[in-house]
Image (tube, rainbow, N blue to C red; front, side):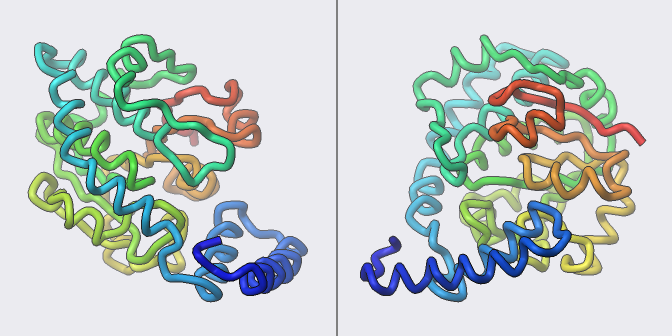
Length: 270
């Protein structure tokens, strides 16, 4: 484990298990629980246990981004936007942080997008809501960053003002502010911000005042991934948030009323 000797790795697991047992006796939101446990794990090991995965993902950013942009060639208007959303959704499959989840091969992207079935499909509503909107876009895993770049490009074509929020510190394989700068995302969007936290989502008591202000004053929040859904769905922000994700676990799939592995694009009702 992370290059640790067997004895040292065992000690880490014992400490993490003890810490988990204390937390499980409290009423803690599941994604917040994951953040606390991961912080303990980092404290006992490395600041970025997913460093190798992160570097591999960043090294392929341009290759994947350019491939996805070529898929959009020839499309215009709503059709182009819809394809970009599907690519962003597919990107959410490229997640090495989910146990026993096998991401699709890069070479199969075109086929996977063309055959994609979205069980909760509110792309038309997202398209209309995004026009000339003040949008906050919440990133998820670093592997899906090139796919999100494509969707962000399309949102800019709709005259939207876009603020992108990435994590200040590492949480599993999630995108950090340093990752976004390395791939030049700041050149595409209107504002690029770090959350002020290494939490799995934008925990309102942890993020910076500037982030809270932007979240509250936005017309629309686009949240990628299950962690953001699990947290934001229990906050007042849910009513202006479109969730884009693949339901990779039974708990989230059951809550959404879809099958495990299903793609969803939807806005939570008040």
